Image (cartoon, rainbow, N blue to C red):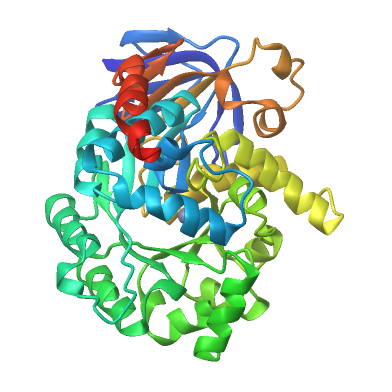
Length: 430
Ligand SMILES: [Zn+2]
């Protein structure tokens, strides 16, 4: 007998099976064990009539705890935003505050249909515990930043935390370790290579910010006599699995490099627009066969973690910037947030689509909402008309994390109270 059967659904498989109407999805031991027209027996039956069921979304670039700074630093230039506003706050944040921000961010992600995320921040071993409690999936990293003559790799908190994560979680399971080089401009190549040693030893994904702003991209060229992507290739960093965030200013030759090494790029359209960084050329990346996925970046530059916004914006930006409305069709935009995101996390065989054997990481969208009627094409409805708030149920490994206004693994009122009473005074330095 199945554990759970979701029946009468319109199922967006995100595989060659396409959209299946009047479909059941059966779940056993956390995995999808049936997809089809029958209704096999199950302990729990969820009637999904009037709902679209699709894979949970993957947020491939997040600094989740930055929810603490949601609305704290808007309308600044990137440099002033980072150096005058964000860094001073981050220097004050302690583990309790970071966990509080992460829990709030996870509540938002779960509510808006995200089931797995790639997080780059601090105190990641404590964040890992919070992720496990919330029942989500996450690739966690603390990015190495090696600036100044006094930098000591062995004493760097990011290095210590990375070792802890790699040792405790390895690179498989719901919570897993990534390794991370913060960016080309925040560490020298010999440090990149030390991070890369872990990637080789453990098979970990290396998460890196790349060519986010024009000045950053140009300065890298001046420093290395080649682009940042080319420099990472030169020092061997691309020989293992890499996930780059942004890629706004990538050049044609960069795309060839990234494609050659099967790298992924997390496109973060809202954050890139809000910080005035520019518009990444997603069509060119996809044409070059780079695996493009989507990220929200932190809520201090977004200011939301709703991936549905990113899906629609990614499609619109690709169309508007190329004067070609066919540049990124709805289905391809949804792939960025599902199949491609899973692949970028090294979870391609595990999540991102609805097929037998994959984890039951599913969301259910309520299509009775006025903003979703009428429906001629379920894919277009989800990509262009749905909001995260239309998600009625979020499930990871067959376990319901959110349903009908209720979070089952997070006490949201408590999470908000913890953020506002404990962490906000630290942000405000009061
Ligand atoms: Zn970022």
